[in-house]
Amino acid sequence: MNNIELKYLLGKRIEELRIRKGLTQQQVADRMNIDQRTFSRIENGKNFPLRNLPNLAEALEVDLPALFDFNHIELTSFEMREFIKYEIDNISDDNIKIIYRLLVSLCK
Image (cartoon, rainbow, N blue to C red; front, top):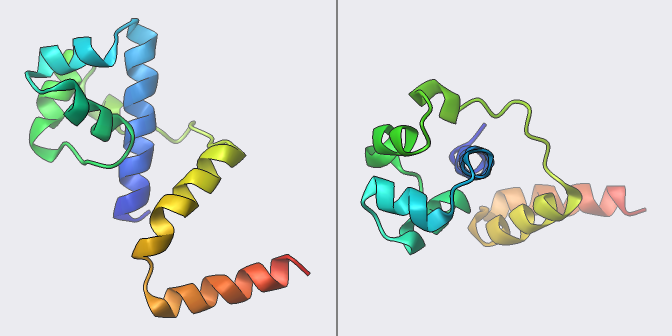
């Protein structure tokens, strides 16, 4: 798992835990003492909350390892497409060639 996948899956897990607790993004952000926009970027997998992980776990009322329990999370086709669209600009030229060849072979 690379860094990008980790951020995305962690964001999905955070959203899952937040919704399970019946909390809004603003409520969790308030508990963490950060602004809602920053929390939204964490939940959307754009930011990794390294310094805020303990505060995040506390705000969601879970232990730290529970934040990383996302083996059960299955991404929808839409989420996979969005992930690909978002990350395509950050892929190296060598990997773009590989992805291109793979797509060409899959689309035949």
